[in-house]
Length: 239
Picture 1 (cartoon, rainbow, N blue to C red):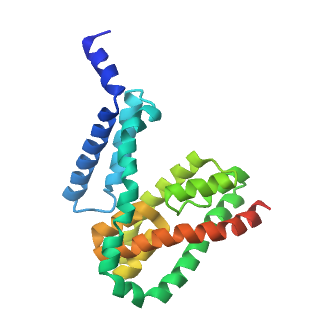
Picture 2 (picture 1 turned 60 degrees about the vertical axis):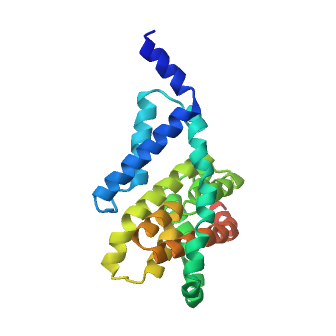
Picture 3 (picture 1 turned 180 degrees about the vertical axis):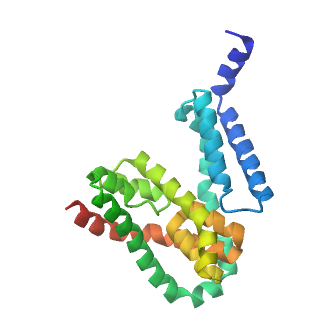
């Protein structure tokens, strides 16, 4: 055992190490994103996942050991979501003006997100537990994992699918909306939050505050809507 190895074993067992590493990786990833002009493909969440995942594999560190430190960042997710209320209050008049279109988009978007995923999975003959894990992929992770477990799905698989969906959504939303010629940031943001939950919402806030506000609203409402409609849709597919 070398002194350097002994030092690493000691540091790796302390929560402060992985909290510090997580923050450093995120700051570096965000600076890379800024240097790229906030290009959609250069997503700091994606860069952070790749960097941290590689680091954990190379150092043979378990997720449980890593999460002892990362849980402090995880705790801040709740306050961050609550903080969305600030731009919501600033844009309250615009929200009221778009209330009916938002309700229509919410219903259609929620149903489409669930049915499209289940239809493709069922076509390829995936087993029922995978269908249950896949169905809430467009909902924020905490709610999605709870829904999946209720119907016999694997929560860990749901978490992976949720993050993957959010990353694809955050990367695709800006070029897709530009290609469609959609210039209304309220509509753009609502679509991003509805399809890509928290990661899409974060991307929307980078583009425009109004877009981020409507993305946050869509993210919250979609969690409620999906929890209400998914039992009926999933029952039909499983049956």
